[in-house]
Image (cartoon, rainbow, N blue to C red; front, side):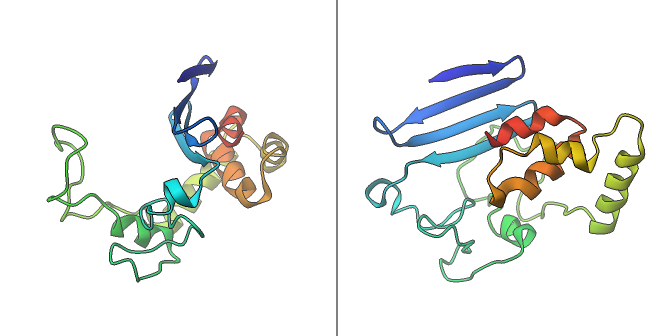
Amino acid sequence: MKGTLKDDQYQFKVLIDENQGILLRVVKDFLRVEITYPTEEVFGGAWQGLMGTYEHGVMLGRDGVTSFSDPDLYGLEWQVRSEEPKLFQSTQGGIQYPDLCVIPDAAALQADQQRRLLLEGSVSHELAEIACSHVHAADKKDCMSDVIATNDVETADLYD
């Protein structure tokens, strides 16, 4: 089921039964994936993957044992491998295993964020906090970072 929320916001629901499903929300160029009302019966076998383990969201490696705390290393662990089925017909222009995705330098990211904050019309920390006031505490920091990075308070809608 597809629904338009606003001009550049869409929501897709993949219904598994009357309550359970997978919610895909697109706000501008950002995507949020949420499992709604998961049960052990349906999702219990999803013991690993990029979204973490079913029960606790633990970031487990492909071996099902190694636990990651660094999301960048975890993402590299789950990079699509050459021998896995392809999502796209061509990998031209993209990074393909065994080449690793390029992780941006933390200092460069921080400098870039500070540069953006100095630009006229940038979203302030206070405005981002207001925009994200409705967001669950566990996601509030990410919401505020996204709002500031995109310079767009509507990015907070991704966290509804």
